[in-house]
Length: 138
Image (cartoon, rainbow, N blue to C red):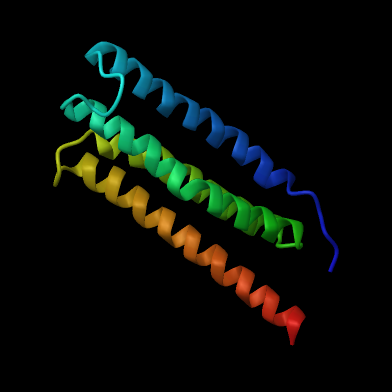
């Protein structure tokens, strides 16, 4: 099996890094506004921003790593683009939903939709890795 540099994944990772920076700056802005050096100071907007930032950090690294490995192992470019574009969409949607009222359309499309897409991309990537490994191991 030939290994390729994961240039497609790297391109999407750069966009995701900019989004992560924006989420981090939003936390900093709200901390300063609320004079909350630690925690959320009881502010629900700050709490949502902290969770959106943390949620990104909890899911994105493992998914990007799996997709990069898939790309490096020769997964067709279209499939890599689909996985990474779906992840990027999910990570844009999720923080939008974090600032909406539960049950609203913005909440459902953003927070819930973003999470569902994230889980689908994560599970799909894991299953693709396992299927590709089974072809090389057996």
